[in-house]
Amino acid sequence: MRLRAYPRLPGRLPGTRHRLGKGLWTSMVLLALIGLVSACSSAPAPTPTAAAAKPTAAPAAASSAAAAASPAAASPASAASPASSPATSASPAASPATAASPSPAAKPAAAVPTGPRISLQLGLASKLAGHWPLWVATQEGLFDRAGIDFTTVVVDTDSKLVQALQSNSVQIITGTVPQIQKANAVGAQLVGIGGLQNAPVYRMVGARGLTSINELNGKKIGVSETELGVDAFVARAWLEQVGIKEGSYTLVGTGGVATRVAALTGGGVDATVLPPPGDLPVVRQGFSDLGLSTTSIKHMQWTMLTGNKTWLNGNREAVTRLLAVYVQASKWLHDPANKEAAIRALVAETNAKPEDAALFYQQLVGDGAISPDGNIDPEGFAIWSRFLDVETGALRSQVFDGQYLATVGN
Image 1 (cartoon, one colour):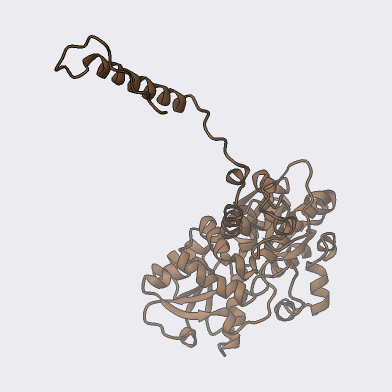
Image 2 (cartoon, rainbow, N blue to C red):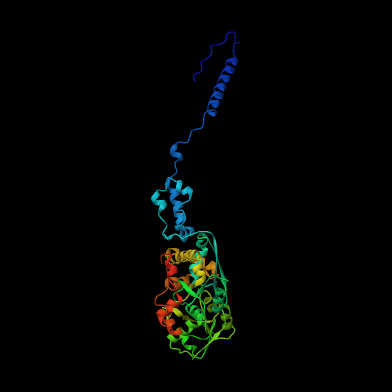
């Protein structure tokens, strides 16, 4: 704005500096500045442009990467759950193809049937690494998603497990070939419905000073039970394979894992067979590691999910849900992408040390001792037929029925 100069006022006193004109000039400048400040403060704030509000692709990509790296993304249940959260689905950065593709750790699996919630109690002698698919299904929420309130009941010995099943204190047990065969010989109607551990994994742990399993001639070996205990059978088969004949050693029935360890550390036996995770802590105490059973025994059908035929046939929906979850968990366990999550599940359920659990993963999963898909080992009955004096095919039909697995596509 151009300021006009005022004319000289008449009648000013000579020698003055135009005091009145100077005051008017100052007032005009101040008024102009005030006007400018008012104009600036009252102007509306600039409106954000559409380009500034548009989300970029980077956050969506980061979210996808984080989801793929998280345990939940590796969960076997993720195949049955929505692939993305509502926020992710709404994001323009996620194309339909990207949202639909599963992460490598979440292999698609058959949908698990659901329905009204049911309760299932499973009996076992100890919480072992050989029951790994059950721990995966528990920790990854598969049982819960299938509407199954699943609990485990620890029963000290194999014979007591059969009694618990017969009395319906539990509906399913981790049964074995001799358990089923001997129970059925006296009127029971037990049958295996799914392969759990298709080869025995035991460590022979000996007294301090022993250096080889071949030194067990004439020694006392602790097992759960001498007649029905499955560890007694694996000890016999194992010792036979290394050339130690039955009768040249003594099997001593001492009970479950904890009592067998007590018998060894207390000097009541010279050696005992221990499954993971109960074996390595004893070796760390200075007792002798005499090797793993898998070095001598390759095919010997071990534990199976086992039920009473009357209950199984009267609760088909529950059986189908159980087996669908079990098969899904078994396949998920054998996916190398899920190894770390599987180790965490075992540690949570059995209190195994993480470093031990990593070793057990190789022994049981990597080497194929645990069934990869819930089926049995077709070659795993020959050794039992010799021990039980029953023809292999007849023994298999007595203790296992594949019709239940067939309902879930196996």
